[in-house]
Image (cartoon, rainbow, N blue to C red):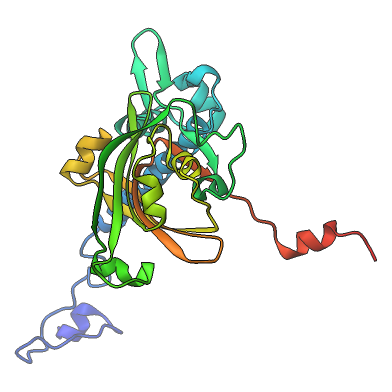
Length: 294
């Protein structure tokens, strides 16, 4: 009997690396050499889906905590969170652990889980100093500065273009930590040109930056913020009572007088768990609908 008769008709024999055609084709040549790979991919996909579920749940609970949704800051029980969000107990516990690591909530045995902080909610126009309602949330009676420096220094070269002066021009460097009660929430370093700086030299710094400007008779025209994020260095972490490497809201601010002359540049580093800025915009179409018909 020939080899062809032994293996049957229609079978194609592939040559070996040495050119010998007498080796039979492997019966497993069309099968995966890693039969466990699809199961591993499925497991990774399910694991990633669970991580997304935890992330989304964390964001939902975090927003509710910061918005003051829960009465008295008391969070619902794990069972209530599970039912209200259609989540598993494992997902709820993982989300709460992330919020505890963020120091937004804490759990007390026998009491439950509650919010640790109640951030100030303020209109962005208030932060810019162009809007200051009598009952502003941004300027609480408990707000106070801890002065770090108030001295006349040469304008740094990197600020000369912003302030439109020659590098070395005298300016006032006024630096402070803002506190609410005993809690620090921001570090601000201001570089102020004269003559505005002269008005700030002897005025007591009692409450907040804009109160100081008002009491010194400094009139604001325009204000602008540029925002990003920066990691807390060792000294900033100590001053703000956070861990080194914590993400801080970084704001570079310019303030101009009514004629558009920039007289102040400030660098502000703020704890993100103490403030929530609010702004509102309306699309042109919505504005058109509100206008009375001609």
